[in-house]
Image (cartoon, rainbow, N blue to C red; front, side):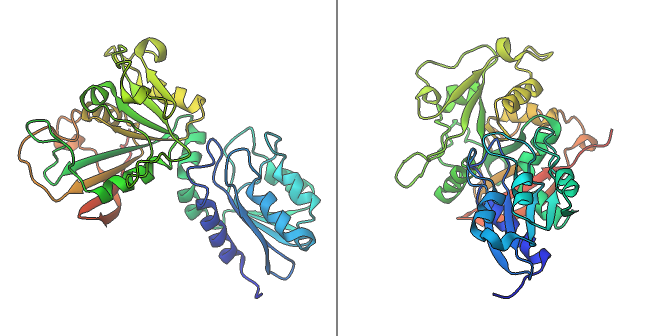
Length: 353
């Protein structure tokens, strides 16, 4: 097998890491490629599920004795603590790896320190190779760990003129089956799905990740979170059906903001405490507006159907904007056609203080 460059190996490691999306939380996604002393790939792996072997351990097992004197190329700094598995820094040292190339330092104070341990053992460590790409592939976990609350994606569906339902309240279905399948795939990548009690009362959603073709549930289900300030969620609501875990978050439990409703920042902090690193906000327009007004939304994914209604509820209500100068500016990062619809992905630009 021909030798490969460290840059090529890191690209491969980032692609491997992506295979763990939706299955590793509360741990990060990580990929690793091991090169022998001649630069040949002798092992590779990724972190497949929480509690399972880390990417470095999988790659070391494949490489065996050929890891000695070689280079480990890893998307995240090797861990330096013992949790459900042992420290990867020690495993790399024991295997005789001579060099470790890291894309992104570990921001988790519990697990970080692997680079220092490796250097102390005489291992050459380089940090920052393809860091931007590795950050993008692990953005939810990294963002959550750095600030202490989940990476929040607001998902909405609307007509071309911004309506989420017709004037009579009907909304099934604004977007196509292809878009709905795409949404269920998106649910499968997060740890929690959030909706307001108004959505639960109006639509009685399941908020589960499903295969729409046969109705089967995904093996891993996100936590269902109902933001319900005064505890109005009915006992018979489908979010209480046992298909997935559900948390009805009330103001009495979470804490109330100045308006007497659930304090959204406190809600996200509690979700982080519960192991949620990425969350999907699905409804409705009032709750979405409150999260946007508070500056708590990290990404927006909008499914826009080629329909016009001219009247009816809009996809977004009060987001704290009273004049054009206060508009929430967005950076478009992707526009993709999904069936007949457009899926638009955007990032809210941070406002200057």
